[in-house]
Amino acid sequence: MMDPQKGSNSEQAALADFLSRRERLLGKNAPLFYDTPLHLVRGEGVYLYDAEGNQYLDVYNNVPNVGHCHPKVVAALTRQASTLNIHTRYLHHAILDYAESLTNTMCSSLSSVMFTCTGSEANDLALRIARQATGSLGVICTDETYHGNTAAVDQLATLFNGGKPRGPHVKSVPFPDTYRPPMEWDANDLCDRYLASLDRAIAELEEEGLGVAAVLLCPIFANEGVPTAPPGYLQGVVDRVRARGGLVIFDEVQSGFGRTGNMWGYEYARVIPDIVTLGKPMGNGHPVAGVVAPTDLVDAFRGDVMYFNTFGGNPVSCAVAQAVLDVIQEEQLVKNAAEVGAYLRSGLRVLQQRHDIVGDVRGPGLFIGAELVCDKSTKRPATETARLVVNKMKDRRILISKIGRFDNILKIRPPVIFSKSNADQLLETLDEVLVEVHRDGVLK
Ligand code: PMP
Image 1: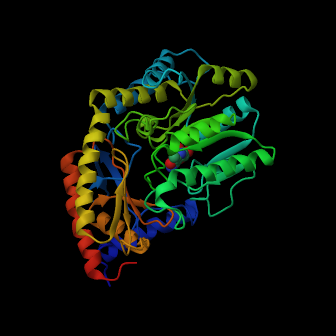
Image 2: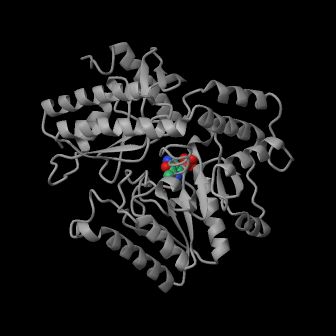
Image 3: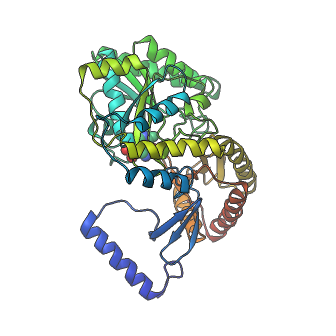
């Protein structure tokens, strides 16, 4: 029988062929989005188009931050790619111009750039810099995080790594969450409770003779589900880690480049880290990433280690990244993320009033989490319903995703060119879908 969501029998057969070819060539478990995967062929602005020409509103992808295939970014790439592409061991103005433009957007201590190709490599490198600078090995992260896929960075994560335990030099602390804190904790002293678990992690690293090289955190706890941290938490973390000689690394792979309604997540968090790592939106889809750190730290590291990254920060990548920065400035996208983000959050809070299933709406700028629960008083996670909602939104041609320990938090994170009318379209459709999942059955 034909499934209306999956198309005609011949379309289903074509999809089955596509999937079996993919399984053969990429392996069985290569991840895919959605119950019925999407075959996209084109992107423009906030829209994506599938092979049948259907248009989708992209409310998920933060890599094409300034919009899919932005003409200025594409032109910069084409221009430089047809002139010269070489690595960073030759002199090239584009590399320095970009490093200067980038560091000019940050506070004065964040003054030198080391380029990589991915966020994973940037975090890996930041850990190496911190370990070299402090002479310590220990690293602290949260208990529900992801910072990338190199062997060293994979040791920090349990999320997305098949539940493997953390590595030997790593201690994790519970991520700060005022909506769903540990049950036995008193709501009035959450900040102290979370910081006490950090104190314990520091003490354990010291007892084991590892010391504290760094804490590595996303300043908005993106992969943890953008929880609202108790006021004063991040400053408390920074004070404690620095007091034990460790460095504070903020992973801005998700929070950077305007996402929070500030250029940098650390501005949103009101805390200045020692090192930031960048990636995803930096090249709007082109693989460029990096570490920004004080010049003396970079000098000391490079004095000891001949770090070289063949593709990292090549002139094409830098031309692309420069165009991305220029577009963010020219189109005032930081302000847009703040304004449209606030508009969307208030619309989602109206849905929260209307629908029992929406337990919490939170997040900075255009990174919004809407936590689905079966019951607002017990907060039992509505994991299966979140899966249904994401798939039903896709069937209505709106792309969102889900995240969190229980996979029950709708992840709403569009390119930062997202407009209020795009937000209205999302809100209307989500309202319909929430009515439908409620009408269709028990929340689970
Ligand atoms: N840090 C964070 C916070 C991320 O979310 C990710 C990727 N999702 C990474 C680092 C790794 O970046 P990449 O995939 O470019 O290696």
